[in-house]
Structures are given as structure tokens and as C-alpha cells.
Image 1 (cartoon, rainbow, N blue to C red):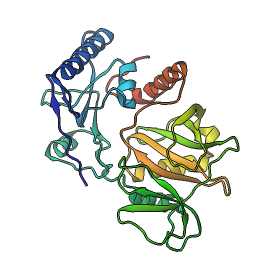
Image 2 (cartoon, rainbow, N blue to C red; image 1 turned 180 degrees about the vertical axis):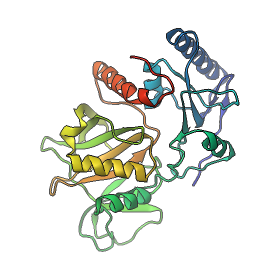
Image 3 (cartoon, rainbow, N blue to C red; image 1 turned 120 degrees about the vertical axis):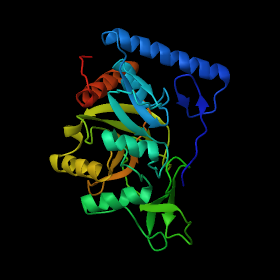
Image 4 (tube, rainbow, N blue to C red; image 1 turned 90 degrees about the vertical axis):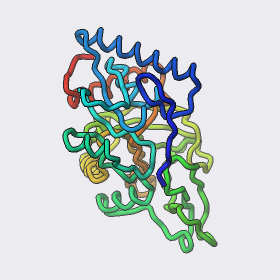
Length: 304
């Protein structure tokens, strides 16, 4: 299913939400200010990243990283465009390559342009091929806790049920429950930032209340060095998976099962928001580290 987003057209961008005239004016004003700040920081010429087809909102991780780097963002493509980076910013689970995107891909590397399917069953299939094991179960015969989720992303939250079930629903994905409880009334998710087609040198551990729900609000978040959370073999396989799904920029959701210690990649997100759950100081540290990770891939570089 491809969702058609309706745009609010501004002077400088096509904003993918229904904004009133005053909201569009404020968005355009923010764009002008970011361009001006970028020009001041980079010798009189603003630097930019082109995201197509959708405009990344100010809550997106990418927008915050680029703001840290004093680089502006637009979703309008022109022949005279000379951006630091092209990025396919698409909010759909199944992502299409239209004529504009295909033309860009002929002459430029467009990040995430080949990451066209982030459905739950595709993620699971690629994960199984790389890691050699799986989370999928037959819900009609499996006895024990299982998780049921829509195959499409960002449609509704999953549910934790007890199998075997009497019936299944089409377009839903069934997997065994992965126990990440820490014994302190919390469950732990690991969020892995991806930049340049590989995991970077730090990850987030996100803590939620352990009350048999799949997506409770985050109660706290910690930053950890990647090498302290995953062993070298796991990091190698994570990077192999990233290449398999053609993710240049985004985040992965990874769970470690208590009973056997195995890790499971359960979600791919090419348009993440955040970082969330961090203190103001640690959020600034995270964005600076993300910015440093992105810098080598830009046409020009500078010190933060």
C-alpha cells in the first residue's frame, strides 16, 4: 500500500502535512533562517541536503543532525541543485521510484533509494538469511507468548498474545515473544543508528515499563558504545543485514533474548525521529556524534 501524502506548498519546500497559511509562512521563515545561518557558517554559501519526495519534519533525526551541522534541507529538486547529499525520504512501507528519483539515481548516489520494502515480513526474511535463525512462528500451533503486528509500518501497535490462536488475520505478522526484561520492571530495546550503510560507533538502549505491551512510552534512554553491546561477529552480521536491505541512513530496532542471548533485528526505519528519552546534554552529545559520522559522506567537511 502506497500512501499518497498531500502537500502544503510553500515558497521553498513542499511540506508533507496539511498546514494552514500561517504555518506554511513559519516553515518558510525557518527555512530562510537556516539557509542564512548555513551561509554564515560556510563562507557565504549555504550548504544543503535534498530529501525527495517528502520534506523531513523538524522532529526527524536527520533535520536535527543537519541543524547541528548548519546545513539546510529542501525537498525541491532543480537542475542547478548542487547539494551535499541526495536522500530518498519516503514515509511508506513500500517505496516507489518515480521518474524524478530514477533520473537522480542515474547521475548521483541517492541514499536509501534502493531501500524499497521495509515491511515486517521482508525484514524478517532478510534477517533470517543473514543470521540463520528467525522469530516467525505458526500462531495456530505455537504454544506460548507471541507478538502480532501489522505488516505495514506505523499503522497500529502490536499486541502480545498467548498461542496457539484460533485464527489469524491477513496482512499481519506473527513472531515469538523476545524476552528483554532486565529484572527491574523494564524491557530493553537497542536502537542502532545507521549512517553510510553501516552501524556507527554508538547505540541507544531504550527502557520501557514491562507490562506486557509492545510499545510503552520510553522511560529513559542510555548511550552505549556499539562494541560494548554487540560482539564483533554480531556487528559484522548487522552490517551485512544493513547492506542487504540497502539502508544508507536510518535506524534499526534490535532485541537480545534473555534465554539464549541471541539478537533479533525486528524493524528498519529509514525516517527516524529523535533521539528521544535523553537529557538535553546527552541529546546534544548524540547529535554531535551523529553529525561527525555523517560528515565524511558530504561533499565538503568541516569541524563541528
